[in-house]
Length: 365
Image (cartoon, rainbow, N blue to C red; front, side):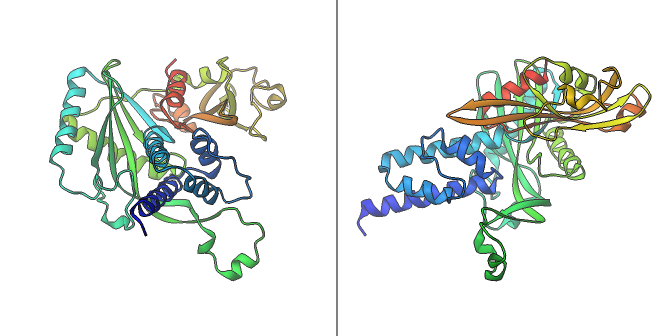
């Protein structure tokens, strides 16, 4: 095999590996199509066809220079996905000196970090998850601009989830009983490298903690890993973080805001103390439409206390439709007990800074 051909084969293997990383990190096939490969001008493929195989075929026809550029773009998109997508977020007001102490501490860890098994793997994932330390370790610092700095931190995380398999993971007997298999998934205890995000916003004097895998984790797991992340940042600061931002008093505002977003889930307490839950029957519907309120908010004359809301905004780009979602999730006891807070929100479907900043603008109105 000549050198040029061998070089191209290595690039194609790298391309295939990067494609797999999107699936391993939890990006769905529809999003891989619409949010990853469509903007890179890859040919569109029927839902019934093997998208990865089609992309690999298209990549094989590229020049080495173009293929290198695509691989670089994919890795950049994967990093943005790790930074912005599906995050449980908490905000803390901090003064500049506190942010600086966190900054210097984590940077020092990055400089002095021995080979923990994390730096060399990013953005790849190790085949053996057991080699990933359960303790949080810094992976990389990212300068967004002169006022915002991001740290990616990683650790091994184990939790119960649904994860994707390939058809090869099924026996011939199982395959023979299923027609037109497009995707295969399984449930079980999953061990993976989790990449969480620590954001230092010097302009707003704010610390932002973004816990990854928002959709996949149960409430118990979320609380467990959130405490772990908070403990890590406290160690970097050398003191308490203070109180996180409270979103409880803003949930009703999210419902009535005329911002073109659709309300798709809503939990609230009526004046009579009756708990109600409303969800759309169709993903394209809006709970604020009249048909949903026969037994809902119209019945209580729009006077209620809400403790949970999910709102979705629809967009169109590159001839593809997509959505981004904001979820403020609390519980009834927060309202009944009083003096409680909702200090975390879910920001979902964000594939980059633009999506995230859009939700952020809605969140912090």
